[in-house]
Amino acid sequence: MKQLIPVPVRRQLRGWLNSAKNTPLALDLLELRRWQIARRDVGVNAAPRNTPRRLVVLPSDPWSVRQSRGDEAMIEAATGEVKKTYPNLEVYIVTATAAASADVRAMGFKPLELWRQPFSYETVAQELSLTRPDFGLVLGADVLDGYYSPVDAARMLLVADLMAAFGAKVSVLGFSFNSRPAKALREVFRLLDPGVVLNLRDTISLQRFDDFARKRARLVADAAFMLTPRADTAAVKQIATTIARQREQGRKVFVFNIHPMLFKKPEPAKLRQMIELAAGAMERLSREHNASWLLLAHDYRPEIADDNCLRPLADRLKPTLGDHVHHVDQALSAGEIKAVVGLVDGVITGRMHLAIAALGQGTPVAAITYQDKFQGLFAHFGVSESLLLSPVQFLVDDSFEKFVLQFLGAHEAVGEKVRQMLPDVMELSRANIAPLLGESAMRTVQEVGGKVA
Image (tube, rainbow, N blue to C red):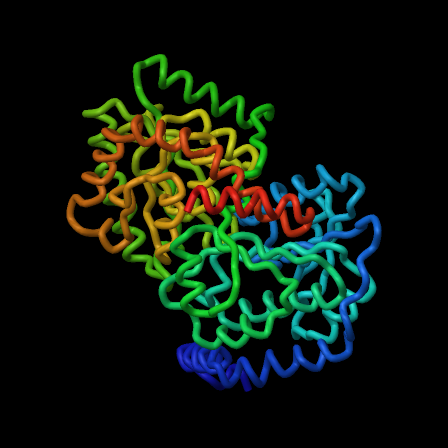
């Protein structure tokens, strides 16, 4: 039967079905009602153990947990901080596939493969009843406003609620909230158990969330700021040597990163145009301003991998720039990437968590922004929004070259401001795990949040 329907028609039908699934009515019928059935069987919140034993982490992408270095950074940073207080804690990561489970084991954690298809709240509840988590961490990142999928956002939130129903202390790690959230999620937020602590990772997102959901939430900074850099690996040492050689020639070194997700829908022609404009500008700035470039990926998921853009850019630049451009073509861990961005003069990136890694090292950042989520990050550090460029602006004439030229002139002053603000931002980052650690930690969070705001 499938073969009888032409491919364009099948794609159009899938599009209609996905659109229908994301309406408030469908969310009510397919998600909220099924969740309510599963929730009814849980009963009252279970009593907490005297000594916490288990932490369950729900990543924003259970299908490819480790290939997104942003998720990896948040998981390692947040769980590492919790384990400073509870060193014997067992950490479980929710996965959707056997491949993701293998990645989780490689990270040193235990997989909890409960995001299987077809998705079932009753199955999730049964698994949680066996695991009995004391703590829950949900990686909100940039998905809980429904930008990518209201259904996936609803499921993450409602599973957080189920963890709370089983007696776990649950913290939704700091997430962004864009200016056009999915209306279907308003009811989901309203119904959440009060034990699910919602954290927004910047003041702009916090205000948007309050206007949308009218539900109490806290100001934090992204959990990934807590990640410890790994400078002792062979890969990082090799890159450090490459950077040092450029510095010996009196050159400054800047990380550069673009990726396919700068446009919501696949737009190969626009990406090719972006690569060509970037190459022309980088050639001129290298020649006229002694800039050298390190092309650095931060996401390795095959269809949206950064190297889908960075590899052709490297091929385009290598004949003219020689050793003044270096493409890091091996896959680095989140900790290694954070170490690398601490070695350069500045970072120009379209990846939020690459920017966070750099700022966490005191390195200045300019961003190619999408989903209007970088504004709040820059506000934490008092950095001007003039160092933000949209993908649409990037494609206009010489806008990108002027943007980078401005950054080259301002990066030292921006770096000083970032390093000045970093201690307060680090405290706000630690606020993500305060709901798991008790009242004294929460008081510190509120004091720092008030100071920064």
